[in-house]
Image 1 (cartoon, rainbow, N blue to C red):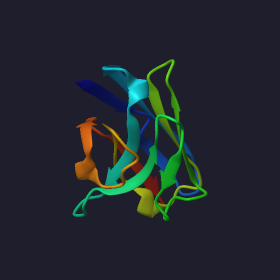
Image 2: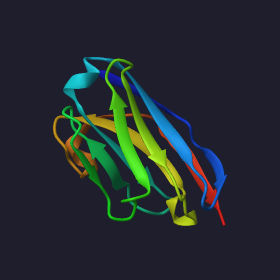
Image 3: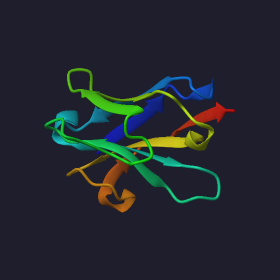
Image 4: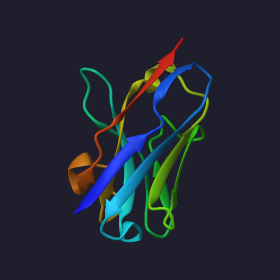
Length: 121
């Protein structure tokens, strides 16, 4: 079992920045690929970014060049640095742990409870 707890969400103006964190406990964090997903009201959960245990990364086209995913295995923590935020980035953001660098939510095994990000125009 892996327990995941997100933090760092909040309200920010368009063009601003936020850094999300995801603290992991339980099984060895470094063995897992980690992902960030988001879900806006009335929409399906969508892929944002993922990082492998070797630090390979993938990004959704909508966030490329604005968001950066990283991990610190010594602190069992995953990060998402979000810059140049847009109102359409407003959603609940979730971190997830899985075996490979997947982009589909169903391929991840463990999920956090989510943190709200609201970007005002």
